[in-house]
Length: 581
Image (cartoon, rainbow, N blue to C red; front, side, top):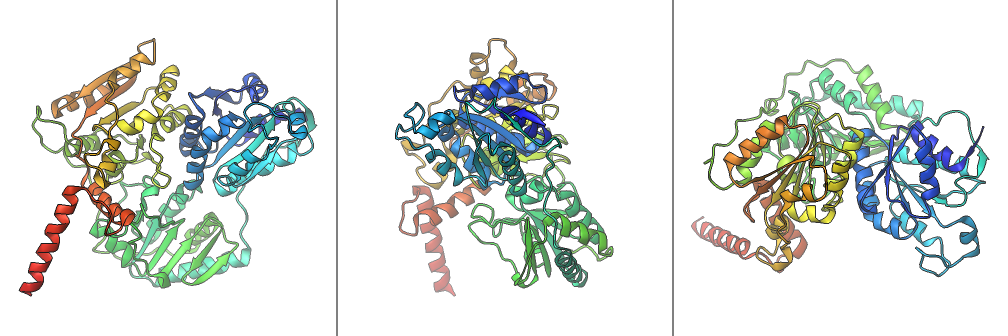
């Protein structure tokens, strides 16, 4: 069949499940936006800037599948590049489409706006190639082939791709396939699959204390149900790394918690590190997910399942896909009635809120104990880097909840536009955002986009007078960790003329309880500004900060005065103990 190139791209995006395209208009992409306007399958959703568009697409992909966003060449692309890099680091499938100058300008090396006026039209593509798994400049000759190749690559690797669409080719008619685009994972080599699955089954059946640990790829590649089936069939305890928070059902009796190396709860650490057969699903041991590489894994009994290959001990086995090997193991392994290991705890229950003086200042401890009671099954929680992520990643979530964060790339300001993206794709689910004041100031304008579409999240703004996580690491009283103290709760009314938000300011526990009660029944956006002490933080974050100060600055580097005093006291105590011994 024959179609206009831009219309064919829009059709292909719709076929792979994209229902919204985020972005910012610019003269080089307007011809494509006109084609999006006339289709019933996809809606263009405007953002306040290109970085926010990239973040919104990332959030959309995490709850709705493959995502897409549009920018204009040069200035728009480079404005979005940090968001694209974040999606690459976190394994999120995002299609980046940029409208480029017309093909005749590219071919003649014309000196046009939004370029470096040096005739080089490949420099942006070279930048994007560092943070995407496939790239193409669309022409009438290659459109049908390249659009399909790049979209398939996005799905295959669950990472971003980059398409350049010259403004003068969008309406050119070309011959394209009539059949819909089908995104399918590769097929395993049959003999390699048989051999790998049998080896895994043999290891599990001979193990006394097996365990499973999952990372984000378990969710990205759609194998969480297979992990659950295997765990239930063989009575295997499961843990997750921090990037996989909420990938498993945290109410299950087989879920033991988050594994983070030496920073893990002792019960979780015992299950994982004493396992005589450890099944890893898509594991990436990063500094933040392992408390600075403190994991202890017995590699002789470690089965490392990756997206397109695996290893069993020291034996590498290519040509075996994650989903197929798990499916075959689940289908063929015999049910196990092994007794539950005594060190595998039952699922934690939400405890009652910490008692506190209702008129006393609000504290992190009082806050998070109440948030735990406020959560509902199937909530979408978004946790910004800092105190919010530290608290939420330690919390046991209700069944069906989804947790969105960016623990690897760690771009502050990511979560507000990511909230917007997830809301657009999954508006029927209740969304809760927890964001600090410093992070909020980076992308605050996207609150207007949420209000413009009359979306109804609950936003908790943690106002602790600046960058508390940075103060804990270094610069407790330094000016570089300060931010302007906005009247945050007034912003929803500044950014929206229709008064579609409920704004509340909370300074003590009694006000927090009242605010949560109002938020639970509200049918509008709820914006709650929480006023907290500057250095108040979850205990896990304080420990994290000390570790990273040592890692970042070395033993002779700078430290906060309080941290230095504490270490000197500890050193003195150790010397006294040595003399006593």
